Image 1 (cartoon, one colour):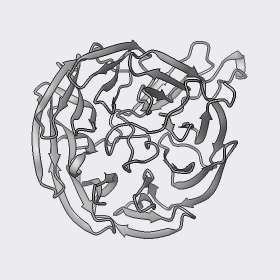
Image 2 (tube, rainbow, N blue to C red):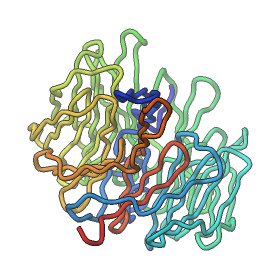
Image 3 (cartoon, rainbow, N blue to C red):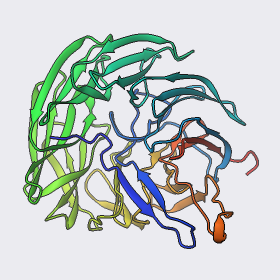
Length: 423
């Protein structure tokens, strides 16, 4: 079995007419989530808790680029960052973790910590510390850092194979996923101080993704059967590490999106069925009982990107093929809007009924009907390439701070955009 914690990550080549060259676009789908309940904004990348929602709002005017900050190390297409209260960002780029302060007209680096091994995505814990994993080609370490200066507060060797952080439980337990040998995976729980609590092993062909839900229930999609004839199953383990339930989703299909977990604990999964000719949204109760399933209007398109997000009211926003579709909590399609197949549509929902996107610049749509509110090119494209060509930057998903949109581009540049002072 293999688990992909970035879910529907796709490396696509997007060719713009008249451009001097094509550009690789690394797309991260499946609802960017917040590690910490009540965090000021989600952490881009994957969904360890609920869905990609932020309590912050932005005015109904296009933002403008306020500042950009380039990091010394070359980007690796896997930068992650988290936004803390007060305009402090924690950015991982390769093996360096940086604390960046948003000072309005510029971003300044407060401190930087260089690690010897591979560093995981930064997480903001309830005690105020910054947590990362470090893998030095052996058992990974969990590292707690002081947000004031980056000083190491505590370092704990994690159980063998545990390397990927899933999320923080209701009582402070930390959950990890890892590989043991060639064909065995495990989910580990450790206490807030790093003390091992339990390990649950699983064997088989393929796990798709994991999400941490209410009552510390961890759900994950499984791919069974064979490569040519896959079967899809969803499983869950409880806070003690015991198998809670298993639900067969399809005898002829595979999980390609989710799990995303709504406020009421409902679990949203996207499937490709009938030999990848049909896309299906399946919603289950927290107990694993199916609530409903609905065929999505767009058939799968192998070269495109897909994403799955869930709003506060249980509405699912699915990007599939050349369309984005909104489906309410009862299974009714609310609207469908066209979109480019290679542009990611995993946006961040704010508290005013808008979804904000980062790929290809910046944009916002009204989630009530899918209409555009504004579109802004952040950063502006270049037109000074040889032969009169143009190039475009493709920042990752937008993260909403207090009146600010943050984007991280592939070339290790952090962008901050905000509405103009005199719209």
